[in-house]
Length: 214
Image 1 (cartoon, rainbow, N blue to C red):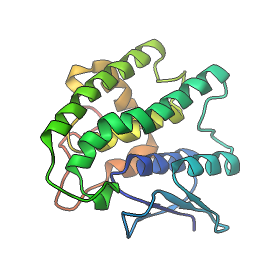
Image 2: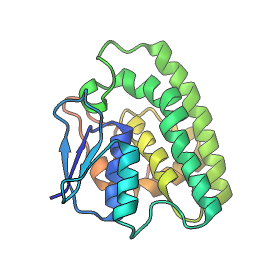
Image 3: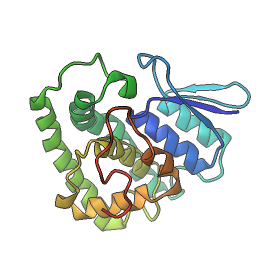
């Protein structure tokens, strides 16, 4: 059986889970025993190990070409990859690390050692998040999705990050109707079901986390 070793609240691990589900590749998910190790890891039927999100994207696209993750249209493909790069780079550094890594433990995110949250860092992340949500909303209003006619790799990457933040109720959806509409459509996809079922022991999600109409 294929295996996907992951951390529950890590956005890169959540993206890997979404990609496997979008590809409809049967897989046995397993929570990492040591959160200090690089994650996620995908192990295929022949024993091939793809370690890290970029290796997993490449492996899935190369070995499971049905249901491609990036758009066929060159312009939409470039836009999708640009959103992917933004999500895993600037958004991760400016928002996710400043909020999620301050509020969640290493066991579930792979973040550096646990300490008391620094609310000054969290507030800075929240300010950056508002700017990001405005950009997401503008892209959605222009094309319905972030990069084209249908959700693609970039949409999934951004949604993976937002889902982890939304677990803690950190996304001010009521202030950003367009981004909210886009995210509701993303979390309604079958690939999101396992993520919406996530529960951190002793740290339940925000009340709306799994709701499809909020």
